[in-house]
Amino acid sequence: MFFLLLTCGGLLAVYLLLRVTVMKMPRCTSTARLDGKTVIVTGANTGIGKATAMDLARRGARVILACRDEGRAQAAVTDIQRETGSKEVLYMHLDLASLKSVRSFAENFLKKESRLDILINNAGLVIGGKTEDGFGRMFGVNHLGHFLLTDLLLKRLKECGPSRIVTVSSMAHAWGKMDFNCINAQKDLGKGDSALGLLMLYSHSKLCNVLFTHELAKRLKGTNVTCYSLHPGAIKTELSRHSNIWWSLFMAPIFLLFFKDVVSGAQTSLHCALQEGIEPLSGRYFSGCAVQNVSAKARDDAAAKKLWEISERFVGLA
Image (cartoon, rainbow, N blue to C red; front, side, top):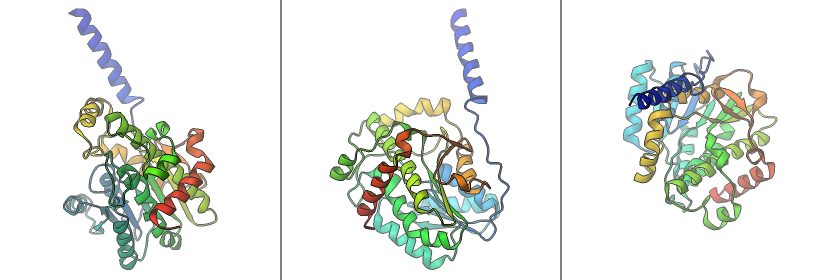
């Protein structure tokens, strides 16, 4: 019994040490004000997106919560307005699983809003199935919807520069791969709806985010718009709320022990959106509020260009 207690105590001590060292999340140190500026945050009704929108509202920005679920989004608007005292927080409908909805959102936004200074492509999910346009849902929501949204809003971002595009990826991109034969044939990044299959599809979609940002930076050279992708950290969010029960059971103990709060998860998004002096790092990948090196597959020029061209064709831009 003594040995068991000693072992448990040792494991607890190691865990607590990890919590205050390796697992400790850096904070965004920017003191920038955003008065008179407009920001879009996708998926801002919950989790990291809501925490990001909350911080930006406190800085004086006009914040657009671009979300699918009106009820949850309006509740988030109320919460953010109450917490920050800002009335410049509003909801606009956006369903990233529908290219028609993405186009409608962009059209409405451009008609109603004269500025766009920061676009934060934050929304993401872990779920199988198809979008209404026939794409794999994670491929469609995590990548294609944001790809089209960014393209449709790019002219306004250029007009209001210097401006930024921030895309929330994940360290899971390191496990992803680009199977272009599967993408062309199946309109999806892979197959499988088991817990492991969903994890791999998610990883592929997050690699798409990094490659998209890599290629976007090249296309933005000579403009006053910069772009960044990032890993927010291991964060307790509702990312997998639509996934199956086996995925939820698999992830529950990991979330409980090792994942951090959403305010911590928003810090690298805020760093990429606000930090002065990172313009020369456009196209790079950040984690822990610092630029990070990525593997060769995540900065593959040919793969990034091919993904861009396929994405253009899939969303009707080519």
